[in-house]
Length: 612
Figure 1 (cartoon, rainbow, N blue to C red):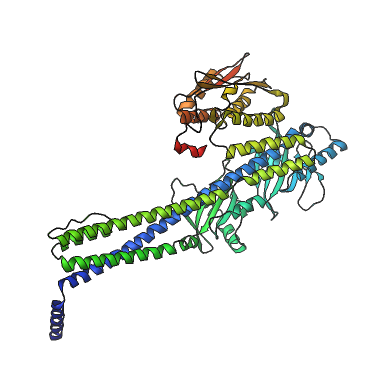
Figure 2 (tube, rainbow, N blue to C red):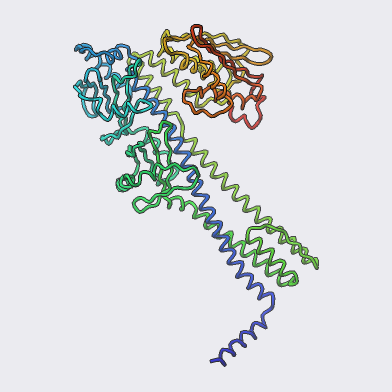
């Protein structure tokens, strides 16, 4: 046996002696470069896979936040609609009263409820519970006409307790009706003691949430809507997945759905044997949670082309590397060790230049190798940049699809319905509201004072419908200031602050004066009211909040602090906002904005023009 082994060794050694040195080194380097190419290709693929998942997660989270913002605005509209009985003086007086109701009064309530129900196209049922009279008036889904029936112990019901404990005075419950999105219950209170005197309860259909659900970034994406108690209000999952999802969001798994992470690490969950990428968004009130489930297989299918690209790059790199090694070893064996080190460092991602001497051929080979590494590095960077631009373009397209036009169309439809029912006051309210909504969404961050005053006029018109003669506004605006550029919704913030904080105690009405004029090449905007004023301690806290930007007290004027910091960002230290106030018998509050001249489109830096 030893004889045969020795003979085999001699045969191999003899054949190796016939092979040129450059061929041996070429073969050796080829094996090493193959391994490096495989590692590099796998590294590129793994990195691209991670980047694709992160990009998908970011896009899904941004899209989900936009959907939740739109849904939050819809919830605000529902809340405003639910308290319409407060603005009907006759109905509100009936809700506050405790005496026995006549048949005529009950019929008037029935007629009013009928009008409320048919004023919206998204309602499936509507009820008003008169707690002082133990009566309910409304219409259930599928019923004909408005019914009046008795109720008992409403204060012990879950609806009453949920509204009483809610900061927003409303609560959301799942509905047994498969066509309904949820139950929306809102309390109506007596202003003097905040006693709940009535509840409005209605079901809304799924049309709006189904529209939001249709706007997705992946064909297999599943959108779900939960209450913070864990009730599944809506899902666009199919029946089999819906059953698995309901089982998954049981008590032992609900925390994983509502978890809030401070980093951007992807969250995964396995439902029905399928792994999903989970993203979520909560509304500002903390009443709703929207989640998105994207199958991980759908995300990975998007990078199959990238995997092929990585293999091709690896093959090209391998061919070039082996060819370079062949040339160097064949003709320049002397600097072989130096070149191997350079190649190995380049394979590890460290781009460096080769400087090989001894001959003109070595110098030329050095330049050729350096050009090759630079081209590869440039190609990799260019491809990364191109892929990033493509991702950004897709994100911009998806964002453009989320358009608030359906809100305008809804307001227009409600306005048309109001005109058909001779409700001109409601129609005027909707026109003003739609105008302000369009302004707040579409207007740039910096607008002319003339446009801002139009927005303020619409806001005052809406407030006067609510407050009637208790609100008077006087304006003294110099025409020379109308073209001056101001931050959007700055004056409305001051007017709203006067209305909210100026009325209290025995002060039931307020007079506001708005003044705008030029002084020393600066525009002065002043809002003065005769409200209850601000105590010296509270005034000092407000002034401190302008600079601290940390508001721990919910009663502080957050709007004023935000406005102060906005004008500093736009105008610099030359802008200022001063607030003076006195409380007592001769109380007043004055807020003065001093803005330098003159922010226009011609003077704004080029990078900020996109906001105007």
